[in-house]
View 1 (cartoon, rainbow over the protein chains, first blue to last red):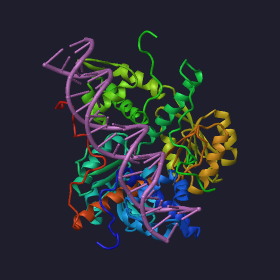
View 2 (spheres, rainbow over the protein chains, first blue to last red):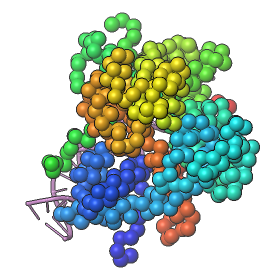
View 3 (cartoon, each protein chain N blue to C red):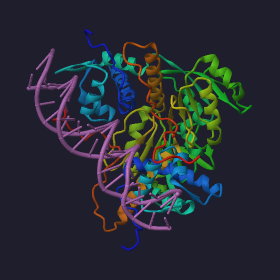
View 4 (cartoon, chains in turn blue, red, green, brown):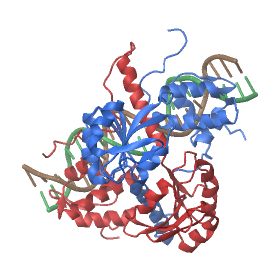
Length: 240
Length: 240
DNA sequence: TTATGTGAAAGCGTTCACAGCC
DNA sequence: GGCTGTGAACGCTTTCACATAA
């Protein structure tokens, strides 16, 4: 063990969830031809505190230069290596409604290799040159592409059966938009994004606001704000 | 202050994020004409542990009956009251691409009162009877509807200017799908859903899996699984 | 002097275990 | 007996403060 080339397994989940954000900011910095960046600026752009950014990066290794900052390109490379975004993962999308279509048009960091939908009127349609295939051929599509990541953008009632088939086909990562909770074996990673739920959470915050405006005898107290701008800088001070 | 009718301000954010899930399960139980439910069943259906469900509900009040469980309809009512889903919040959607359209078709617990897009080819088109209006008229649309919740489903570069205008119009809750981090005043709640990022996180997990399969000299160690099925029941035991 | 990297402390969230009530 | 409600323990995440290096 000479130079610390070890990315070290065991990165906290919370950190993993933020790495793609950092990577995106770095991409934007590269586009602006910015070669070096400090933890303060990078953190501000990513909407986190500088110390959190440094702690996050420290889990991957020491890729910065003290007194200077981070070399954008190098850090970008290292992050890309860890996140796996460097390699483009094959992804299969099940359910080509508005949401599925939106995903199909995405193509950063991964490659859509399969589109599946049960609607006969949709089967055969092409998105970016890729034809939509029938749900019955799911086994073929997944098996043929070797995809391990799948997106479930079907109605709620279809989600679980589809997930079961996906898991049987060797899929180990699922992104679902269905409002139901998917039941999968422990070795499968599921991420659920529920648009209705996101709005319901916002509704709660509005509800709380109007309630406190009605003003019972509870202290007014400043609203904490779940996610605000990254203005609450800590550390020592912040560079302009 | 006699009976505990106080929903108590200061519910943990993590709990707030789960309440809509519980509410959805309760709706489904009502549809099945089920009158009573235990924390165990409800938790299983929601994909959380029974103790977590009970703790979550305990923040709202004591709405269950010991030895029996929860009255579905009553709990549904109380949860709806807290979440604010009972009242249908007016929502404005900016950016009517595939994502915006998907949102526009949603209509549970809130009411879409405005659709806005800069594309002249789209302006005038109706979704569920509501006409898409030009981005230039955003002030009119938001002001006229009194909406406090807005969805930003625009390309990344348009998100910040749109958010600025929304905030100026009195919007205090924003759901954004743009990959950039929105800069807003502290009193505004922002929730960001980045589809590309969700996939990037899954890609990381796949990356980690294949890496540990390649097996460097690091200990193999069982993969933790970020989100699995709720099979890991704790408490005492689990019913069927 | 600057800005990173990191132990230590503080803050949250989840799980446990059991008291309390039906 | 059964199941809820909840203090206490535990573990994870974030923040702080400073040692470290250019």
